[in-house]
Image (cartoon, rainbow, N blue to C red):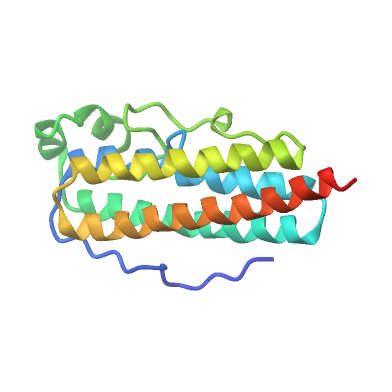
Length: 187
């Protein structure tokens, strides 16, 4: 069972509106390397981990990724709050507005909707952890790309926080992979 605290890990207070930047950041909501895919990946993989250590780590990181989904959704919502059709069109994201208005909808930056094909759950702890390591690096790289495209300090502060958490997750998955690989060698 999960306990929900009604606050995010980092406050999200965006003062400038920018639907175009929202469309870019939306990839971390519903894109292939985004927070939705990560949370579903880890919360699915935990069921085939061989021990409580693996189950616990994937549960912890999977639930943290859900909180990151909340953070990214908040950024997108605040970047588009009060913006109308003409604003979305001026920023070149009128197509999104036609289908979703100001809603936060899980798509990648190109507009392709979220699909379960974005994440893997193989049932082999080593294969799944290697997948998780790659996923964390791809998420970090996506956050790096967002930082290269954004000049909004309010957005960048939150994106840097999320990027740092991806690095921590990568390290934790690496530690667990090393433990499991050493157990295989000692068998």
